[in-house]
Length: 156
Image: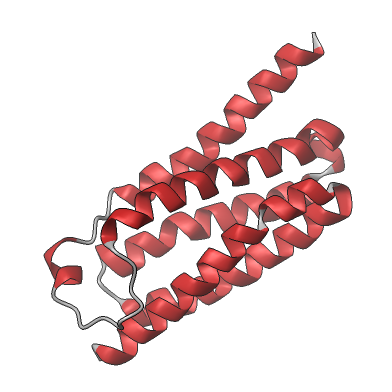
């Protein structure tokens, strides 16, 4: 039945997105991050978890909408770009918190930003809601990139 296929597909996309979140969560801020000089516009640590949870859910729904309407074959490029940005998303946490390399993490987040923009535009062409669901994610990563740059410069 179609609804079972759709429900299973949504579960898979949620698992992929929250799987990336889980990978990223292996590298927590810790003492190193606490000791960094930070700009005044740094959000409180408690805010990151709820924001990212909402964003990962929105990302999963966006990918699911494209997959549901077109399948993997007809949407191979947008879904492939989406998976690339998802891997880059998880890698940033490892670079920034795991390796404690803000400079390298900044260059990586710039590539991530481009990948998100590409996925958003590719999704938009197929489903405007799916594209729009990635807008808050792009905005948050823009903010995170600015924060990453500030942290790098303030602590170099």
